[in-house]
Amino acid sequence: MDKASRVNSSMMAVLQVFLGDPTVPRYGIELTRMADVRAGELYPALYRLEQAGFVASEWFEEADEGRRVPLRRRRYRISQSGIQMAARSLAAERAAQHGPYLWLVH
Image 1 (cartoon, rainbow, N blue to C red):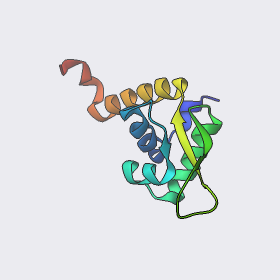
Image 2 (spheres, one colour):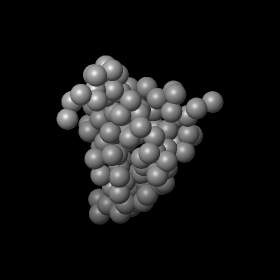
Image 3 (cartoon, rainbow, N blue to C red):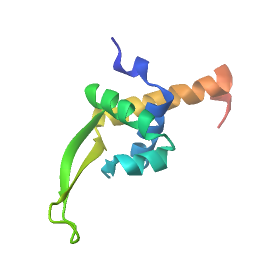
């Protein structure tokens, strides 16, 4: 089964955010705003992207002076294979939008 064949619009919106700067890890709340998707769409998309190897996640503890216990957050990062898949998927999406005459446009 081809991993890229099951990419939906929420997943593509998330990948586009990561492609903006692939070196920056992102938090879920940040991705909901930047990708303009609801949390109910975001987390299943992130889960599927992570299962496919396109996104990796890690838990991160952030100290907060107002709290006795550090704030535990999960941050996500696009993988190299995610960058390649996203670039191919976006190119295919653009080609589909412009039809077979895309090659005529410079």
